[in-house]
Image (cartoon, rainbow, N blue to C red; front, side, top):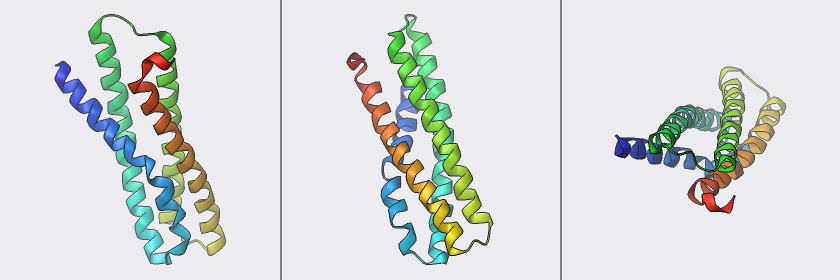
Length: 143
């Protein structure tokens, strides 16, 4: 059972790692036409939905592996990891709402730019959180 948990945990981590490139995709968003912006936002929305699911799987498998080992790791590591994953989840939810609004409404350039600006900020914070989570998860001794 342990190998199954590790497989899904690593798969979910890889899917979540795709958010490292999000800021660079969103930086080019303003250079696209409206039709291309809609297509890109649909694709990004799909990735955010997959990211939300992979985050749930990541939390489940991580908790299962911690409980399977029978001993609790350092509480600071567990707390830091959990907080980072919850921050990533919150940011994914905020990006989800902005991308959904971009897809569902007929917006003018000013409103699109307003959503784009927020998406850019959320994507950079998400990228930093994912990188920090990877660093903490792979090197628990740094805490």
